[in-house]
Amino acid sequence: MMAPFTSLADFIALLRKARGPDNSALKSAQARNAELTKPAGSLGRLEDLALWYAAWRGNSRPTIEHPQVIVFAGNHGVAAQGISLYPSNVTAQMVMNFQSGGAAINQLSDCFGAKLDVHAISLESPTQDFTLGAAMTQKDFLNALQLGWNSVDNETDLLVTGEMGIGNTTSAAAISLALFGGVGSDWAGRGTGLDDTGVALKADVIEKALAANPSSQEDGVEALRCLGGYEIAAMAGAIVRARVLSIPVILDGFICCAAAACLQSISHTAIDHSLAGHLSAEGAHEKLLAKMDKKPVLSLGLRLGEGSGAALVIGILKAAVACHSGMATFSEASVSKP
Image (cartoon, rainbow, N blue to C red; front, side):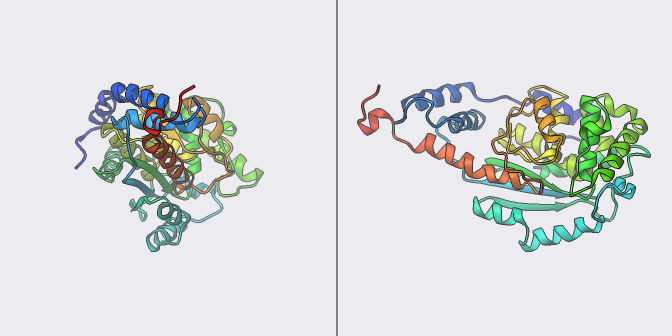
């Protein structure tokens, strides 16, 4: 399905009118959960995850058959400010690695039976350095949102969005500052391994970005356009498509969550169909998750990106759903209830 929006206003309207979870399916799933052969609550958060998934899929006894991982790649003009240890050509090199099956996300997708798609977006034409003005024009921004939307398969029943883009932790930090305030140092982290001097430079660059883009503090969509990247905008487009199709989403780390936070600023229920896959080692991610009121499933010290932390949670969510849908009830197993 091609994106049904041709303007940012249309995109926002689609997000605001998207339907919520199926409460009837949720009630039925809760009733089933109460009858499964286990002490009440003994599977802990697995039970909550299964019920959440059932509600969004509109099925009280669901299965996960078609998980999809999408990695978007884009280059950032702000990399010229020296905010990364790696040159921008590493983005294209890593895309080739994804395509040849050599990256961590390839192994994790295979491990959990997920289809992996990779979309490189205008790598030869990075976004503008946002210390000088908006990262994207209205047209380029809309194109990235549409690309993200179009990348989600109709049959997908669980979505992970990942990214690759040298300089994109700086972009995510700038977005976070625009949305939630503070100073640059509140949101600047080490990214791919910056030392203290590099982190201080990144904090200064972030503050310059907001000074150059005062409209970025007006709303999340404008923050995403002015301070984001093509890959971050594409993730947002994919997340909204998933919402419209009632596809649950597992959010990855700091960068993916910055994209989701832009959507949440438009409507507080915009990303209720998503859960935080993990808490990354990027310093500001914990603060961002707190602002978004999202509790991560895992905390393993990951800071790779690519959707890697979220991909791990595919296995956990599959396990949760398998227990919920496959276990016998007390009556079916002829087991006495307490």
